[in-house]
Image (cartoon, rainbow, N blue to C red):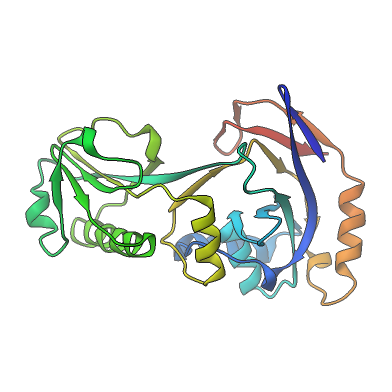
Length: 266
């Protein structure tokens, strides 16, 4: 399916994949997973497809949906295949912004984490940064080590301060207030995401932020077609071929704000 986006076309394919053949690249948030499992047990449909790279089977968006359906024993899952390495598919990371209530001595709070004090302007998008009134770089030797250290920092804030982060795009983080600390993960490359997924090395939840220029929604594939070991795939393929989408241009406000085009299937 070709989606016109100004002077360019974006190619995507609606189909089904075997659940066990897809590769996640992030861990799940347990509470979110349990909510989705509960929702699927009372639903008749998979409403929105999971977005995957057509070459590697890496799950780019919809990890919790994939994990919930896998846990519930579904054999097949509706997917939207895209070319991950198409420049129209953007990769950013999610920064964590913690409300800490007042000035926090980062060197004392993270005393067992190696920190390098730098000027904010010295930092690059490949740095793991902790930003308060001062800026600190957390050195690392590999991206896996960087995200392992990110997990340590996240757990320190969550457990000791009992606060949950606000997730915002790394690229949108500016100056933080005296009541905030921002943790900025390094921006990954697409080949690194795929390689980690192939090695079954899962990043912390909300590590990557993928922006696909056109997002299919409302496919409403009957779950009973996704349960059978054999025969269900052909029926789902035929079901999807009969659907026709309505292209809705952004911004769109549904359950949240969408800044990409929506292909809403009728």
